[in-house]
Length: 593
Image (cartoon, rainbow, N blue to C red; front, side, top):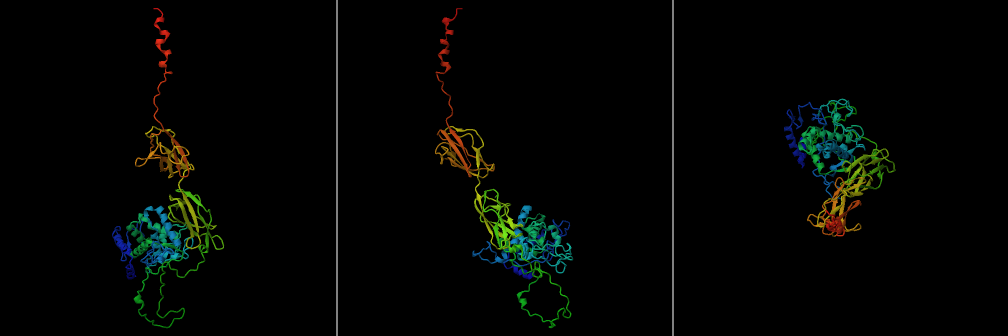
């Protein structure tokens, strides 16, 4: 197997060489007491940490067998679509079953929120899922994400594998003697006991459910404070899953392959791997060698064995390979013929706001009966910054008892225009529903000045007071709303005045129209206003998107001058008050001394 594996690596998968070098460096950098076995795996003398904090000696899988198939040399990038004429070499392998892909992306989104420093890429989960179970046996899962039949690795009885005696009384693997790796991510029961998670919200932690298993794998890879954007931490995380250099190389090959491009395919149509780490493939030259003839050509009777024969051990079950093809009834998803719009037809929101109406789809059979427990995927298409609440462009929701799935609320971005949302059945290609949502410009329905000081200025001067206004929409501050300020001669004027108050542009030129935007508090703060030599009263009119308008008077006049006294009213020039003419003061009429 090692010779064949090395031969396949030389077929152009260069990332494995880098990964192997990283493993060598990693081995040298382990804590004191760490050693490297002959296969490049590592063991450590530190056994005091809890399973959630340390690299388990048995890894997530108990170092069970895994698929060693390597990706094609080419992967479609971008992912191909009908009629594009793109080279489709590697298209089949690049496809990931719809529900399985959705589970990986949901796990990434959850870990982005719960453990943002981990930087878990969903492509890593896809790479491990490919190596462990061939993406849940090519996506053979039901609408809930549970495999149509259990996925079990060989019993870990020490016969060519690790020896792990039963730890769960057969609860997960059905084996009360030895443990077996379980589910699409191949967790051994003892690891699942602490790593298991409920990824689909059904209240259960089921290792055979791809949503549960993918989320558990994400948490497992993100423990110990590892940052998976750092190569050393990424190597450690992968090795902790299965302690083997070859395993690390294989996972890294698929990780890089999926990073270059992948696409969604219907459930149950994925390509199944063929090569296993516990099986040596006979080279083509050996297949032509003459086969030894049996000593006895007589065919033994049924129920008898040839003389001298001994019981043949049952070959180990390939990971992810059922012993007999299971016969399963149609799932609810299989019965869906089409989707119908189960809500309103029009959706409108202002940029930055949350849409008040939510999109909903109803799953129906060809006879028009509703279908419950079907996963509906809502996808925002095209170039837009509108997302679902939480920042995602894809949301998967299960239909309720009435066959209806309601998408999360849409959060309008800053790009205005029409947004298209497609609803389809996860894992099926049936007639879906296309929704149109409209994002309008931010608007205000009220605009008022924040001060009341009269705005006056002398000819050729500058207005002392700045103009500030507040815009609101339905009583709330209207932020990021576009507005235009214009100096006009009258209320009815449609164009700016050619004289009177003005603003200055960047070059110092007089302009009488100014564009601006409200701040986070809905405030508009106009720049400095100046006056030319024209006296009079002018109007500053400010209008926002949405039609809110206000008008402020601007007065330009000369400064008040002292008034000249009127002689006819000035007491100082009134003859009646002149002492020289006052008879009471006439000396000739003064009484004698």
